[in-house]
Length: 432
Image (tube, rainbow, N blue to C red; front, side, top):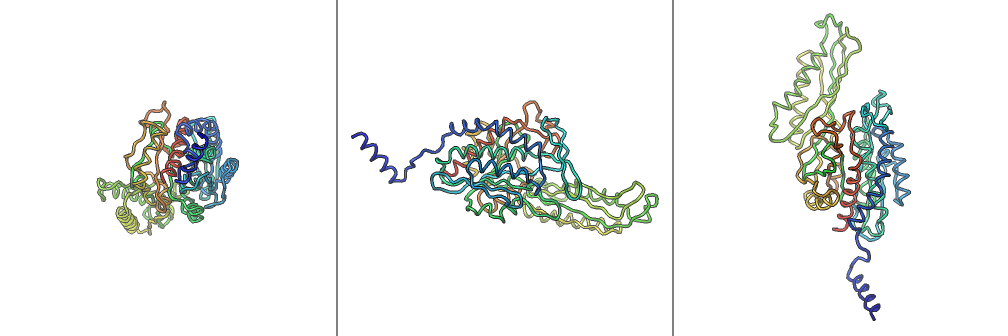
């Protein structure tokens, strides 16, 4: 009789839509993440020692595809040039959630002294350059592979589908190329299958294991600035016979600083205008004909962006005119503001708190860094978070920031990152 009652109860539950299988518990996720940590560390070190620049991530993509296939994911390669998409269909029907990691490194010469430090070089915009994972993308790939490992072990219990997006060229492609989230979206990363929500994570020099985000605008928009000047070449001993490019470059740099600090209301909305490269001349006694300057602009509103573009272009042209040169500022590779969906931001704190109890901040400061994750979040609701990775023996003041040749992380925090990604994905599918 007892057996018959139990059977009827189960059948009744199924009839009313009760799940036949329980959702994966927090304890199960924690145990699986801990078990995967040695692999995550090994992946990170391998990727760190073998970095690849944007749109050149051939080895990285092959590693990712191989590991995902071994875990039973459906895998699409060559998405957005070198991107990889992994699809895991759970044992129960439901929504589709995506997790994203970026794969590209930077043209930076590593100075960390790590035993697995990069000695790689590559070609970037016509020059041979050193290459380093100076922004932590090696950890992003490793953590998402760790999340893939955990999720694959829970496939039967997952209510819906998880899409893992491994993206190239987040730092921006070289001049004349396209790449990054824009091409991943174009090639169907959000449509095959159709994604309902997306989450992303970025490591940085915050306190180890801290998870930080804010609703609505979080990371700045970004534009690449290219300034070209055409002058008149002359002997260095006769500057009056030509156009002094060094003086023009100095005036432009000063003008950019003055515009950013003196011509816009810095209290109303943060913004940054930076000139980072100046290329001119071949000899110490020749004033050259050509000058090229490069930089970046960061803003948090469309109004401020438009205002700054107008001011920069007018100022650069006026400086050129004053010297008798032709000067022009062009803005390319726009990234929109990274916008965290308010509704997702509200409930995701509980998921993150399971990953790092007591270390979640849901009203973090605005970040003047930029992310093309923003392009995914324009298409579907998304939340982007930061993971603190600063080693305990490194003081907060003066800690090497992302893009520094000394940038490094405490590898223990990657376990926290894996848990955060898994909890966000599973909780979203469970709630929906």
